[in-house]
Image 1 (cartoon, helix red, strand yellow):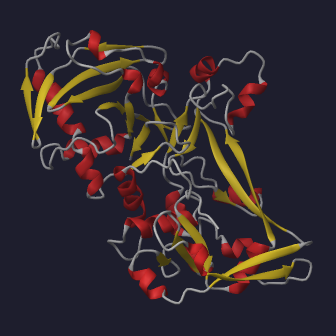
Image 2: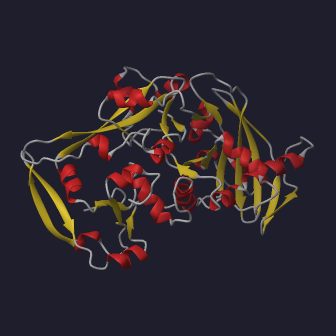
Length: 428
């Protein structure tokens, strides 16, 4: 038995762990749950985490042992081509199914140690209640390994198995399950076709369709056709297409929008060493944070009220993009779009503004700052901006440095790109 993320090479980012907790804590009946508990809830709605799904009800386990899980992407046409994974279960009426039975004698100790979780008592997440859901941490080398509790394997003759359980009961629709509905309200994030490729240059699923077009150029496609995936990669569980049409989420969907140059920031050639003597850093190597408009509003509100901290995302080279809200009903944004490139070298921070339209960008010289114990103080640097308004630049940098504290206190959530595009985060 292994969980979805119980494999080597998983990058743990503290700011993202806090982001998951923020999204779930807004919905939980009881506040101040641990990061592990909130991840356990997300696991039950389709997120890959370090948890194993368990149930206290043998008939529910039997139902899963006699069903075939099927997941397929649907493409929702609009200003952004939104990809929504749709999941259904189909009965298997032949062969043998297996139920793994765990015996956990010290279960209260594991509960107290944040290893084992009973999430069936959360009224806002009806699916967990219907499935009598428990989860166990499976994150090696953390002990215990769930496999040591495996005592029995029960065989089920699928041709004879009868139960009153059904997919519609065990996976209630968003109209019934309020927690699920709110998870589906999380905005979409763009997927640049040019970045979403494997080492051989082939488009990864679900964008593999792009390679079927003769002569297709990914960067050209990105100019005219933008794909998107929900920031929380939550699938839509359905028994048939009618379920999707009954819920009809498409007109509520929003997209964290940015223009092509920012989507393809790893193709932006800008070297800090050519702009300022003694400084190193390339824009193409920057970690990118796309800031949703609502998040930026909150950051502006708290710019002079919270401690300023450099983001804990394991990088001194960050591109912040002021994203816009996109949706199908009307386009309310237009160029120029703004990005702020921050570089930290010991206690020195240098900023540059990037202005972009849909096809190209230009940079504007910035300023330098000493950043010591949360205090940002302007300093003179070579080739600095001649705008005559350094205080405006400083105000923008201060706003960006509120992110850590607002994420830590649960006011904002930082998420990794839903398709795990390297070094791309979304702040909502």
